[in-house]
Length: 129
Image 1: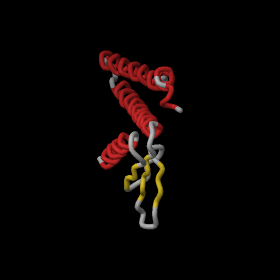
Image 2: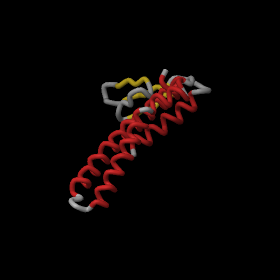
Image 3: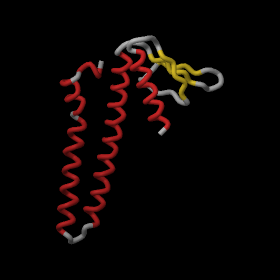
Image 4: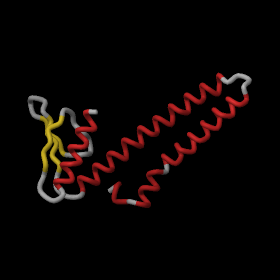
């Protein structure tokens, strides 16, 4: 919850900084790729968002990257769980078919997820610059 609040405040700072000036936000931990951060001797981390559209693109890139990692981990976990269900099905052919079908659908979505870089690069190449 804390990271969501920090990300929303940085997004608001990014939106505000597009038209005004650089915005500084104090955070509890460093957030990579979102802003230029510095830490003082007391452990207070200051995140400075520069004016312009580049900061927003960097934030979008970081969000896409994190969601891709989370979705890939969820797909792998889903494949493992359905593999366990498949192995525990025994002689029940209906349960085996159901687990195998879910594994195949998960693999299909994992391939689509891995191709998301190609899809996003074709639709919006400015994200990866």
